[in-house]
Image 1 (cartoon, one colour):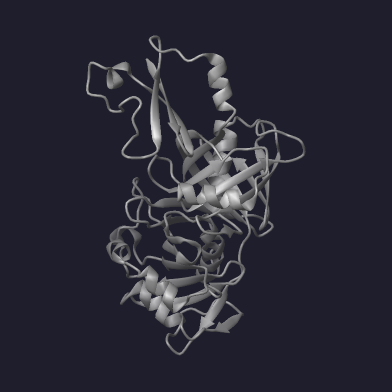
Image 2 (tube, rainbow, N blue to C red):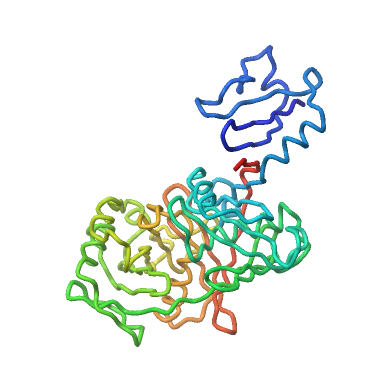
Length: 379
C-alpha cells in the first residue's frame, strides 16, 4: 500500500490511501506524482518504501494545517442530503478569515465550533458555533449544526451523549440518536404570521397575526413558482423566511421542474430586507400517487424546496432551519402535534427530516449524517 499526501500549494490538504497498482509507474496513473490535479493547485507527493517520509517531517507538516471535514447532512447515504464543511480549531480566527474559508469551499455553509470551559473536542460539553455562507454569517443553520455534531461525536470521539452549542440563536442541544450516525437537535420554533394581499386569497387562516404584503412580493413569488397553483402565503419574522404553500395536487415531477430565475429574484427584492429565504412547500393530497415517498415506500407528510439567493445560496439541498418555520406551520395547519416525516425535494439529492415537538414547545429534529471528506486546511 502506498499513501499519498495531497498537498495544496495554497489551501487544502487531503490524505488518501490507494492500492499500489493505481499509482504504480508500470501503469497509467490516476494521479501523476508531482503534477497538479486537473489544473488545480493541488500536488500529489508519493511516499512509501522507495521514498520514505520521516516521521518528524510529517508531524511538522501537520502542525501547519487545521483539520477540516465535509459532511453530507440529513441523509444516511453519501452524496445525498446537504454538504457542510466543519472547521476544527480550538482557536478563534477573525471574521474575515472565516468568510474567506467559507468562500473557498463554496458550500452553502461552513461551520466553526470551538470548545468552551477549557475543554477539548473530545471531552467538551459546550461549544460556541458560528455558520458562514460564501457571502455572509447566518443566525441559524440546521444542516451545518448536524454536520458539526456528527464530526464531534463520530470523528473526534467526544465522550458525552449530549452537547450544547452557544449560537446567535441561543443554546442548541444535540444528542446522539438511537441509531448509528443519527442525532437529535433541539431547535427553536418560529412564530407564523399570515401574509395578506389582493393578489392571492389564502385558503387556510391559521394564525391570529397577519401583515400586509410588500408590493413586490407577488411578483417575487411568481418568479419562483411560475404557473403552479398557490394556496397559502405565511411568514416567519424571526428568520425572514417566507412560506409559499402550493396546492396539494402538485406532484413531484412538477415541483422538480420549477426553475426560479435567481437574478430576477434579486432584482425584484434587491436588499432581502423582508425575505432572506423563500420556502416552497406542499402537503400532498396523496403522497404515494404524487411520488412523495422514500426508498422504503413510506409517504412524506409534507415536502419543500428552499431558495436564498440573498445570502449566496440559490437553492439549498437540505435546510434544517426551514423546519423551524415549516413544522409549526403544519402543526397549526393540520391541527396535528406531530410527529412529521418531511422531505426536501432538491434535484438529484434530497433530504429527510424526522420531526417532533418537545414538552417546552421546541423542535426536535432528527437527522443522519455521513462524512465524505477528511482533510486539512492551511489558513
